[in-house]
Amino acid sequence: MTSIGTGYDLSSSTYSPDGRIFQVEYANKAVENSGTAIGLRVKDGVVLAVEKLVHSKLLVPESNRRIQTVDKHIGLATAGLLADGRHLANRARDEAENYRDTYRSPSPVKALADRLGLYVQAYTLYSSVRPFGISSILGGIDKEGPQLFVVEPSGVFFGYHGAAVGKGRQLAKTELEKLQLSDLTTREAVYESARIIHLVHDDAKDKDFELEVSWIGPETNGLHLPIPKDLWQEADKRAREALDEEMVD
Amino acid sequence: MDTVDISRLKSGEVNLGTSIMAVQFKDGVIIGADSRTTTGSYIANRVTDKLTHVHDRVYCCRSGSAADTQAVADIVHYYLQMYTQQFGSPPAVHTAAALFQKICYENKDALSAGIIVAGWDKEVGPSVYNIPLGGGLFRQPWAIGGSGSTYVYGYCDATYQEGWGKEECVNFVKNTLALAMSRDGSSGGVIRMCVITEEGVERLFIPGDQLPRFWEGKEVIGQDSATKSTYEAVPIDVEV
Image (cartoon, rainbow over all chains, first blue to last red; front, side, top):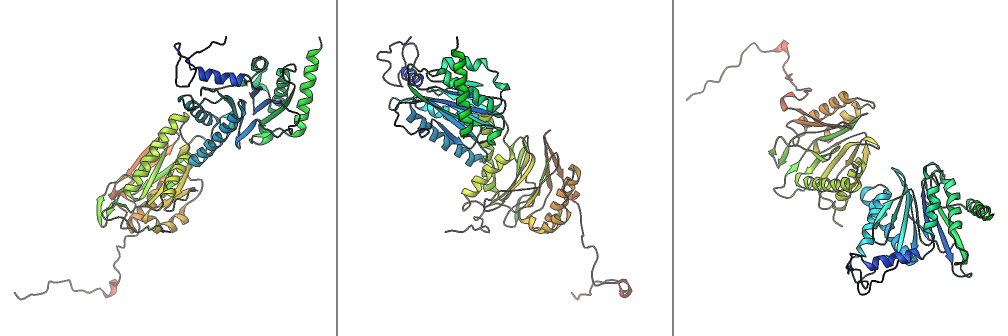
């Protein structure tokens, strides 16, 4: 499965004989080993949810956000090297502001994804830098409706109805495929996303985790916001109950 | 801090002393302009086209320095082509106006350009944006600009009604420009108009001899019929 790219994997500017850039593939590995992040694009909004692995009991809850607001109407959730995620979120903010300044209009999500893809790809060209070790899920609502994009370390990006990156992405994708995403409301999607995050969390391997969810929809007036406390508690409760139900066998 | 010197064109520079206007109606916009370009008192071009295409459904009316406005319009035309390619759909009139405004404001010290941007887009429908000398952006139902516009503010304010259709707006533009052209020395020639709707752009042309005519002062003051002299005018005898 993992092939050793001996000699051809030392820098981004070297192809392997079979046409691969190993550094970019290794960057994807960094994403695969991090906590899961998912995004759901539904009938009237977008929900982003992250499995935030807590590595110390001394951490203040809710202080290390993995989901950043990029513009009023767009959110960015990352999986991978968190510092890279912060950097990309800052860049996304600059790009969104630049779009507003030039065109006097909020940036369409696709335009922002395009700019981020361009930016991330630039770091795969040179041996003096390393590729970004993150996959970013970009969700927002623009005049075309709710939109969801994922930008990978290679710079490639696609639009999705449902997306998952990180450790539990296989399981998450299976769950997402079972849902009829275009029929759900944003609120229902919040409950579903919480359930999926709880589902993919492997209690054996990683001890503790924090559920972080954000949404954009009619209940937020088109703004990207973390879900309110009461909604979070309800979603968390339902997710645990759903898990317990499944455990009964 | 240098102030904007609006009255000084560089020597030899060509001026679009002008009358331009744009009016929004239900299905689209009508834009119109005179056709005179002057260098001082010489009319460098008496059939100028001041209505410039920047996108399929977005046009601009140019007044001020001919060179400045052509350069700015070319740049915006380029940016709107790039926009269409990148984002896959035609830009909003608002977007085009924002690009004009950015250039006009950021280079306000160097430019002498008064531009009216008007057109039709899918989200908003018809709209008219006025960008006067300082680089401010103003959306208005109708806008007039150029040196000739100063003479017709009263006429426009008194005549304009909301809810007009295409024919009434065309007449409004025609009459306003004709009045401006008759009073302003820097405006004249022919009237060019464009009607921009969802379906397309229709160009209208009114030659100089078919302009609407208003009070022309045929009466001669100071001679009433009662005291009219019975003598006919005779040449003076001159000794050679």
